[in-house]
Amino acid sequence: MGIVGNLNPDQLQFFNSQGYLVLESFASSEDIDLLRKRMDQLLDEFDCSKSSSIFSTTNQQQSTDEYFFESAEKISFFFEEKAFDEGGNLKQPKQLSVNKVGHDLHGIDPVFKKFSSSEKVSGFLCSLGYRRPVIIQSMYIFKQPGIGGVVVPHQDNSFLYTDPPTCTGLWLALEDATIINGCLWAIPGSHKDGLVRRFIRDENGVHFDKPSPTYDQKDFVSIEVKAGSLVIIHGDLIHQSFENSSSNSRHAYSLHVVDTDGCKWAEDNWIRRKVAPEPIYVR
Image (cartoon, rainbow, N blue to C red; front, side, top):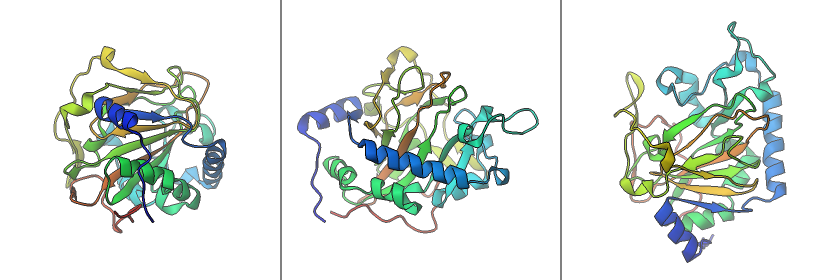
């Protein structure tokens, strides 16, 4: 199909200068309803007695296991750190305990696949210069009321590296994201400083190749958005989110895209797929 870019010059200029862009009303209320209802079904079908894998950005080396590695080509469920009591039992229903579901929703589930490979998504990727883009991972993120964990400052290219770097994050708000319930925060323009460090997978597991820099929280700006808004995130942009201490959840659907034309997927990335992902389009 013929792919046509759908970002205007002002939008491209903002993205190039700031490292992120908000597309308001990107998803319709019908789109949101379909994605949320489908996730409700997947959660209902999930037998949490067979898995208690925890996702944490503050303790990634210790919390990464084979279940996490295998999730690259599966629909897997990861719990919040604070979801369990001292005896290892869930303190509340699984629907209020899961941190995220990933990392191949876009490839396996028809509902998530239809949205992820839509012409709207292809359009702005074309505007950003992608020639043979693939979705390398997808996540449904819950940011649960009261226990939704912090996501520390990071760059997406650290985890999903190509040579040259090509990762772009797509973050769709399925509920209003506010300062109170844990919206995104970013350092505008930080993508211009390049990649700080990489998250490496080797024979010893996973680890960062350099220590974490120290960031001044005054440099971050909040990105509060309404449900249906899409935030496009440059792979080198420093961004984070805080704990959700409110009584409202902050559901989001996140995709990460890399190009496969003129660049190489790093073999020491944490994702090692047995089957290569299909491109969204080829130019």
